[in-house]
Length: 170
Image 1: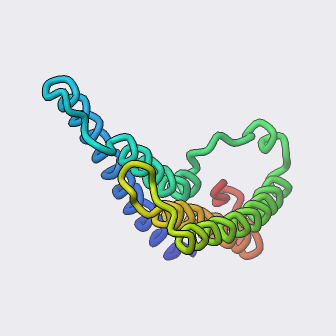
Image 2 (image 1 turned 90 degrees about the horizontal axis):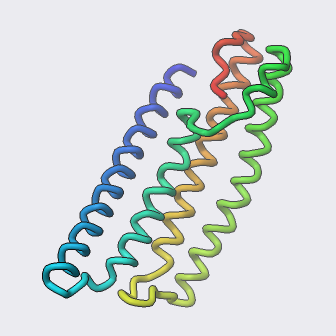
């Protein structure tokens, strides 16, 4: 399990780097647009679409990373009131329900991306294919689903194998 955990840490950190690079590109586009509009009186065509879709890409990549490194606000007070064994069972159950829900959401997002591809839907200004962005959003949610499943497997394995209370990831 430690190998899976270590490998997953590396994967999610790589995804964080990619998301950060996309945000940096976003900032550069915004600054370039401000300068072009102010000094050249010619804003960059489609800069709003670039910023919107790059933000979507970076946010979809951040979903799994945020979950893996426990960046979410949790109901810690509620969980701390439970016994260690009950808390671990509750966390594993929550991981199971979340995994099932996000599997379904992933399916719907992939279906939407395929539909956008079939219809040949494009953006309003730059005429970029919408299916690409829908596919990236689906990819981000699939990564989140994989993350939730991995956390559930690690928590369940540790619960049933060694019952070490301190190793619960959530």
